[in-house]
Image (tube, rainbow, N blue to C red):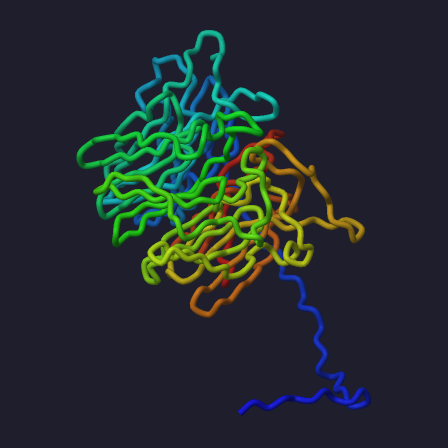
Length: 448
């Protein structure tokens, strides 16, 4: 039976039932660490919690004289330890070439080893865009290409598994842990790479999105997908393109094809010209496979929409806009041109953790950044917020802005790991001895 409720007369309104706005949450005070690398530059993704309870991370170098550095943080001892130089790990110390400047991917654990890949960190800036160097600094050779690597958690030994072809780096990677396959996209041309760990066979399936980020803006340029996922049961791997297509590959059929019944060209994500740099366009920014639900959850970078992708049914459903509360109220995109990579499922298997931006207001007005830039970078200053979304109860929570104990803001945040005790880790900029570097940052458990 449907019962229609009638409006109350004006003179009978119960004013005691009006609601006051919720108070702003208290800021989260984060602790930053100096790992010992004074040249540490902005790092993307390269941070993960391992089964030994420790946090593994890489600090990038944008210099042609030194490569990226790998470290481990031990929460029990509250200490960091240097594990190695990427260029030396790849056996290229005496090569005198542009070094292995960084890793752009998470660590994936399998049978006691962490698997990851390397990327170039030294670029040539051409027309406001970071390009793969075509001319090496005097006395140096060109970048030799990225590597697939492993690190043994028990022995501390590194192993060089394979070299990425054509002198390209690896801008994204994922792993099929059950079958022992690594998948990734090379930079800047955007080739899809498949490496079979057991057979030690590397396959290049060719370009997946025109000329990728090596292309010419306005014609064949396309921003490349930074996140792939594997359907753990079936073994299919998925990734997106700037045009909004979703592609999939299976190692048994060895066929790479586009899904015909679903795409990411959704009005709520915004309207983009995929041939232009400065955003991820229709690409998802970050995505992961949810084994219990057997679907993927992803976030679109610029709009900040959380979505649920069922690859078997070829269906996408928008869940919630998980930007910060100040962003949701302002209705504006955040300041990082590509969106944020600090997005993952927590240890409970039910809660998504997301580090994202929040506008700064001065004298009641939002601090505005640049309208457009031609690469992935911050268009202006903003706050950092920690968001959680509990999937079973559909509960969104903004835990507030994050600051250091001196009141400064963490910036250029594009990584996340959640420790066993609920502490949240990232890599962020801060000032050390008069210089801005990027290093490990620990955020207290937001639920305590």
